[in-house]
Structures are given as C-alpha cells and as structure tokens.
Amino acid sequence: MKIQVYACHEGVQESLLREWVNHGHEVYLTEGVTQWDEKRAAIADGVKREWPSDPDVIWVGSPQDVGQALKYKWSKFKPGVPLVLTHWWIPSIKRFAGTVYKFAHQVSVCEWGREYLIDHWKMDSAVMYCPVDPDIFTLREEAPDPKRVICVGNHFPSRSIMGWEYLEIIMAKVYEKDPEVHFEFLGVNPEINPDNYPNVSTRSLPQNEMPDYQAQARCVVITTTFNLIPHSLLGAMALGRNIVAFDLPSLHEVIEHGKSGYLIPQYDTDAFAEQILELTNSPVDPEVGRKGRENVLAKCDYRLVASQYEEFFANVVK
Image 1 (tube, one colour):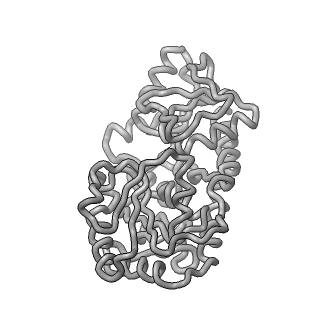
Image 2 (cartoon, rainbow, N blue to C red):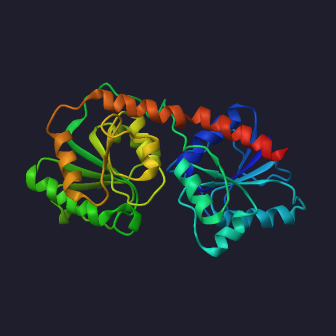
Image 3 (spheres, rainbow, N blue to C red):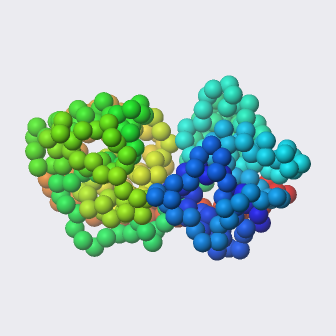
C-alpha cells in the first residue's frame, strides 16, 4: 500500500511510519502546514521524502492539512483517494472545521474523543490510541530520585489547557511543606524563568532523550484541565512512573485511581499538592507503576496501533 503521510505530530507518528515500512508499505512523508522536526524525532529509514503520484490513502492530522490534501488530490486528478484524519487534539468546534471534516474518514485517539466528535459534529470515528514504543519507554531498574517531579510539555504559561495557573499554586504549596521537592519541566518553555521559583528548572530535550529523564522522577504531573490523553502521560506510564493528574474523563481509559495512577478532583490544588508530598516522602507501591504500564501497552503498543491503522486504511481504500 502507498501511504502518504502529512507531518503533524512527529513524536507520535515516527513509530508508525517505521512499522509500516517494516511491513512492506511505501510510505511518503509530506510537509504541509507543519514541518517535521528531526530534532524531536528521526525519520525512519525507507520513508520517502517526496510527493507520490498515486497514493492509495492520505493520512493527515489537522483540518488545515485536510484542505491541503484536497488541493493535492484535485491537482493530480485523484479525487477518489481516501483521506484519513486523526484527531491528535480535541476536535475544533469552529464552523470551518466541521465542513472540512466531512471530506475525511475520522480517527479519534480515545473513546472520550470519539464521543466529543459525535456530540459536536454528529460524526462517528474509529478509535486508535496514541502509539508508544515499549522498547524505548521501558521499566528501569535504577531507583528514581524521590524528590524529583517531572512536568512534560511545551509553553506551559501561554497555553490555557496546560493548567499553569494551578500548577504554580501546587508548586508553592509543595515547597512550603517540603523545600527539597524539585519540579523539572521537560520541553520548550522559555516563558518559565527558574530564577522566579525556588524549586523549578527547565530543560529542552530531543524526543529520544525524554524517557531517560522521565525515568529519574518519583512522579510525573499532568495539570491539563481539558484534553484527550496526552502522549507525555502515556510515555510516563509505560516507564512505570507514578502519574498525578487532574481527573479528566479521558484519563479513566488508562488510569484507575490508586491502582495505576492518581486522579485528583479538578482544580483542587490542596489535594494535588498533598498527593505529590505523599509520593515524595514515603515508599512508592511498585505495583501502581507496573499496572500503569500494563494498561498503556494493552492499548498503545505501536505495533498494535500500526496494525489497526493498516486494517482501517485497507477498509477505506476498498
């Protein structure tokens, strides 16, 4: 099968492209609205950096790329080539987006995302979770730093869904009770000045170095207040790290509170801080991390997800 892929979310797409090449498919990487950042994820050997003349299916990850792909199809007189759109983020509710969605087959990355798409656009979708490579996100034998807390993501202060206003309060509450607990932000966060916080540092890393740093943490915190299932959360769970997150409907698909992670009532900064303090000041139950990894790999192992997409592509091509 000839699969044309529009670059959109390289840290997530990389493992799927690699697996499809290994399965004998011709994979073509196209840069439309988004450029592939090779500092974040390498392009697998065998992926072609060219525009195919006759793809069997076109896979995109944003409404803007649906528009680009439609132009490409008509310019090549290939109107029958099916488009597949994966909603890596919460589907847009803008009128333009709904019009564009009608030209593509829909994929959601969790059941809650599928319900959201139905509720807002009366469109159903397949569900395929974000892929995780268990050979990269592995359980580590070395003990993590008991006072180290990791936050993964870009531009925390400027993106409203990241919950920065709550995280600032949580960090202050934790510092007040235990000044030894340190929060490290992994990602692009130039807006955060560590000099303004007594217990904060920032670090920008390539995608392939993230797991080693996450594995050194006692826990990974997710303060997003409106989201699907962040890929950073899935990777941390595959590493066996303890997750502390605000309680979102989507997260129940991979986390059972107290058994595979910790879900805190939304906006309850006191309870959030107390959970971090408990994890950083007492022995951690290793079964919570192991169960979290088990939950994630049952749905997100990249080999499983790649096969699900292959089956879906084959069906829409028919």
